[in-house]
Image (cartoon, rainbow, N blue to C red):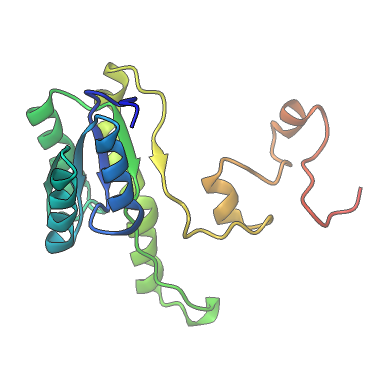
Amino acid sequence: MTARLNGKVPLISGTGSGMGRAAARLFAAEGAIVVGTDVNADANSETTELVRKDGNTMTSIAPLDVSEPAGAQAWIDSAVEHHGGIDILYNNAGDTRFGSFPDVSVEDYEYTIRNELGITWHCTQAAWPHLISRGAQCSCADQSRVSTAPRSSAGGACRGEGRGDGPDAPARSGGRRARYPGELG
């Protein structure tokens, strides 16, 4: 590896498996001091052990529910206390309850909002002052579970897109409304 992240402190949520585990190992291999978290303490411990077996550094807090403001704040505060600050925030954790629209209960909808949008919001809100103080410019969020269909409002919002017909659309598009695949004109 190139040590591109040497000495940086990235916080990665959802480090118990999947992309969170892969990111923790990759960031640590690049020289970062990874601070992870997950709701599954055993899986998170496995990741921490893998990173250490790779000869790299990772600390973590688990189990921890960062879909709630107190959990997100505790994670951020611990990282700042132990490592002096935060350089990167990778909002990877999330959980969705899928179903067809008429079958999704209010409980499932609220669970999904809390565990997709809430995690990113609460962690970024808690980390923001620390990120800015060290020169960070963005927060990374994994939205691989969000539809990427061209007209998907959820997918578009997560990618910073819009329909292109909002009040500032002409300024952004040279006076033209954004077009999507399959549209005429």
